Amino acid sequence: MKKKLFMLVAICCTSLFAAIAQQPFVCTEPGTVFEFGCYNGKGKLTGYTRTTIEACEKKADGTLEVRSLEQTLDTHREPITKKFGPKDVVANTIVRSDGMVVPLDDIFTSILPDESMSVVLVEGDEYFYPLALSVGMKLPDVASVYDFCDEGERLGLKIQLSVSDREVLAKESLTVPAGTFEAYKVAETLSMKFSFLRQTARNVCWFVPGIGMIREEERTKSGKIENYSELLSIQRPTAK
Image (cartoon, rainbow, N blue to C red; front, side, top):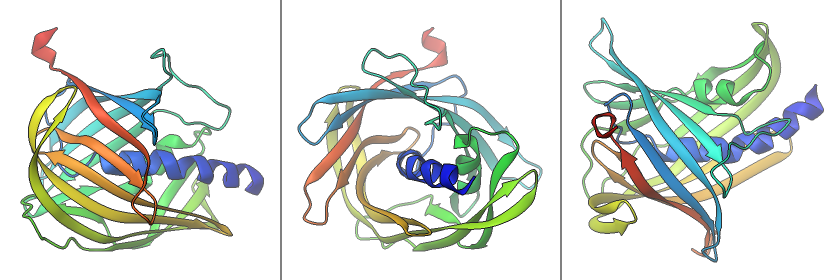
């Protein structure tokens, strides 16, 4: 099982980083579909992702829960299926009065191929964004520990996640295939460790209130773009 988990965590790193990037601002209109093109550092198309807002529910405590589904597609827009993933990623964004929280354990669990398995937060910080961003704002670091579970029993195979150097760099007009938007440019470093496996990514993302991410770049330490994705289209439910 441990060998399989190593493979899963390696895949989860990429899927989780992508899912995280789409959360700081979120669409709350169920049925809305966002399509993104994914490219390598040379600009070659490598595939697509399709994010659908499935539900938006107000809880008794006044918080708003937004559930989204992200599907990974190939260059022909066909679903990608592999033995160990990536699967469709389900994310539940919690909107509170002070900001937005993404339960990352839900994202981890949705990627796992075995329904008896899950991932739970053992200790650490919430992945949090304030509702109001401003240029120069330093966002709180995240340091969390997660554990794999099989049929509810913790396995002691822990994942360490950290998000650091989080800053709002600018508010600027950005044009992508879906249109031109006023967006916040945010940079952060994500690092995930599982046993001897470690993956780190420096992400620069552009976010639009009421939509979410419209462009995301994964960069090297020197600032070179390794891969990127950008918003191609928005399909509102009323447009069907």
